Image (cartoon, rainbow, N blue to C red):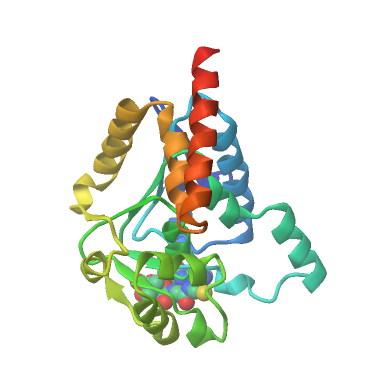
Length: 243
Ligand code: COA
């Protein structure tokens, strides 16, 4: 790969942003440089009114082999590390993205690679894709939102077993456990995901972001708070439509 090739690629297909982790020689191991570039791109995608949905994918043999292990312990100070996390909270930006986001997984989705995927709305994967959270085995926590997103997708017992053991499971097993939304043949993966997002955009148009905001956050609030939020957003959507 050329020295000047970005570690995160960004393209547009009609109203869909396609974001590619682009460090294939290291199985897209997630480096500080990738975090910073991805953060910038997610903010652009969030604010660009011509983009209505997002597809995240990985170049090469796998989606992402987790945090770059060679960078562990290279932060100058704990305070600096904390400040960067507060200033560029990538995981929270992905979670709060007001547009539908799907991830196309193949090969490996390990550690923060899988956690990133769990913050997306839809997870498509090719048969045999390896999924794991090995952090505990390395004396760490799955702290890219993983301890919170996982039990919201699968049962609590399963979430604990998966995170305690660090065992790898295949996408097919992940599909049975509701971790994966759909299994797609490798040669069709990206086209299928892009087409799926185009269909969502054409069917739901501007309503997609309102619906996402209501549905995605419903689990964290009471039913009555949710109904209230729904009423507020309905009013707001009518006001916007009249503009
Ligand atoms: N950080 C840094 N480099 C990584 C990496 C990571 N998390 N995962 C893979 N790489 C690098 C390897 O060092 C290797 O680089 P090299 O060719 O310069 O030696 C290259 O990516 C390919 O990886 P390799 O291990 O040879 O591929 P594989 O197909 O045999 O195994 C995995 C794939 C994903 C099973 C294996 O790479 C792995 O276990 N990676 C670490 C996963 C992990 O613990 N992530 C951190 C979670 S917190």
